Image 1 (cartoon, rainbow, N blue to C red):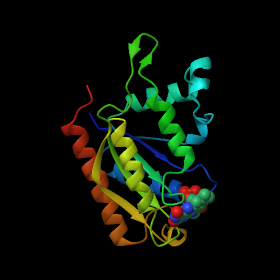
Image 2: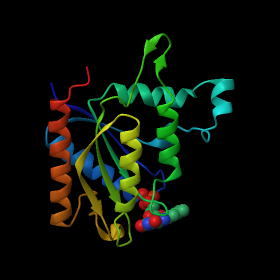
Image 3: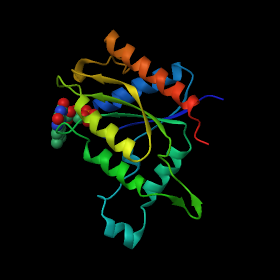
Image 4: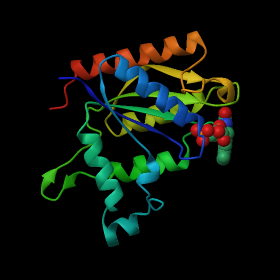
Length: 193
Ligand SMILES: Cc1cc2nc3c(=O)[nH]c(=O)nc-3n(C[C@H](O)[C@H](O)[C@H](O)COP(=O)(O)O)c2cc1C
């Protein structure tokens, strides 16, 4: 059975570079035999994390839906921009809400536990969004994910993708190929159940 990987971007901006990256990653993962589900965080709108909100109303349904989807996959690929050298608030807020979930009704649900994860970043600037990935990596480790070392960070993102959202630069494509390969391999090494 092929490895099931969930892919999403850390931005929902129209024409987002990170969405181009998510498309490139999806293509590469499928080429390597994975069964990929790509989602957009636009479909999982969440209020800003507020513990009073959680106490009064519980976990919002979009966070529950996302947690179930994550739990139903072997691995995760997040493609994100950086905001002020860190994690974009949309992505951090989403990760935080999902981190509050431990049950689905009476059944245990721990979507991040042992979740093999790979990261990619994009930026039109020179740092390629790489600084944000250090923070993203730390947050994912804190919630129990297994984040692989290999990653792909693409600078000059406005000109980095062709019309099919494939990476034009060979070195970037090699980094993406490698990150996808290690992600799939690590999913098999660490089955979730
Ligand atoms: C609040 C804010 C902070 C930003 N900080 C950075 C930054 O630290 N480094 C960077 O390369 N780009 C930064 N940018 C520019 C984003 O990389 C750019 O808007 C990018 O297109 C967003 O990613 P997306 O194309 O995936 O939506 C920032 C943008 C915003 C709105």
